Image 1 (cartoon, rainbow, N blue to C red):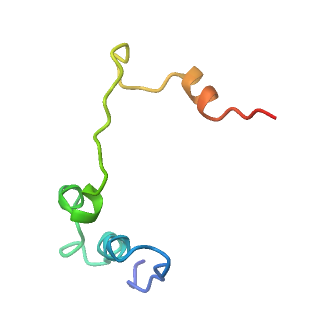
Image 2: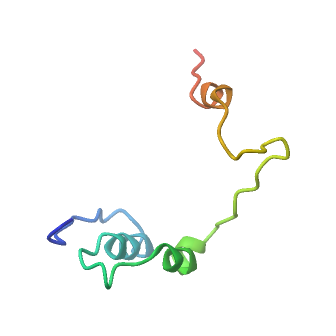
Image 3: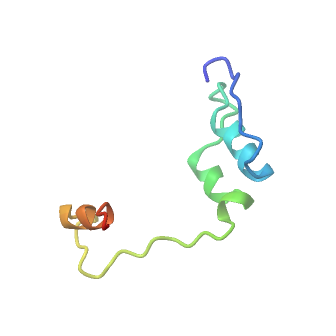
Length: 74
């Protein structure tokens, strides 16, 4: 990344490839910012902002939620 010599997978869409190049730009002056990412056409495609649950008062995950998210059943 430091050299800007990063292999972007060809199976990514052109928009995703462009985004990865901009994120991994070694020059901080030309590197894409978080605000620019949020405004990018590819990023916004199919994007719907997260809606916190009503009982989620602190914005943190409960350990029970993590256990449920990573549980496996046979």
